[in-house]
Image 1 (cartoon, rainbow, N blue to C red):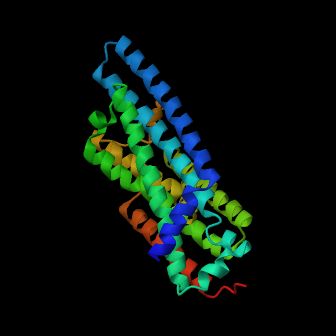
Image 2 (image 1 turned 90 degrees about the vertical axis):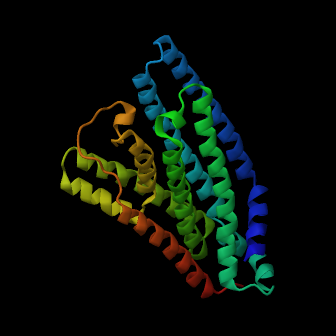
Image 3 (image 1 turned 180 degrees about the vertical axis):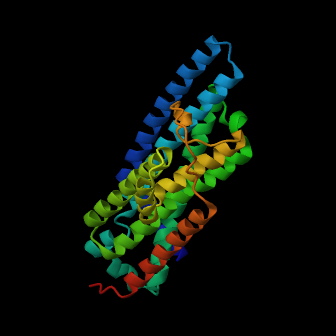
Length: 285
């Protein structure tokens, strides 16, 4: 399993798409730095009021973490949709499976190798966003605290790992292109479902909330992001996911529950398990 994981890690590292996303990440961080710098200068011009700094830090942190989570999700999808299917399509898997490697070890190794790289990338991006804020005197660490940011990081990496699990399953069942379409559709469904659930809560529309919740159960990726933000904002005493953008929309919070996070973990493990089962019965070559 670990041999497959190491091989997968090296293989992904050499892919052009990984290098492309690396360049995209640098551009993104430069733009984020400009936003923080511009905001910091405005705060300085207003005597750096504490409340203003806290509000700006809250707003920019949501924006920064939101687009960072999308970037990580994009990386995860692009690197994982062909984890198994591409090797079946080009015949590489025949060479691998002739070695004394069990099929479940192959699947777990594929997941582990990809997961390690994604965790490393996510860690870099998460720390980079926090560092940029600190350098530009709108410190997330001072606003939210190290403990809250550390807890938030756990959910930040949980999202791509969950996406990876369902992408792994799709890669054992569908061709690479088809799997890409399915995973992207599920990710978008999660985003839409999250918006519908929150909108339903704000306008007290139970039907809209129910549709959003069902969508989130099918695709819980946006829920994980919302849990991350709520965990970070807990240090401020309240959480309103819209207030960070300055909308000030009243209404009850739609913070995901602990049980929803338990469901997400079960969701992740379930799709790894069915990936193993699906690949075990797959006729190759």
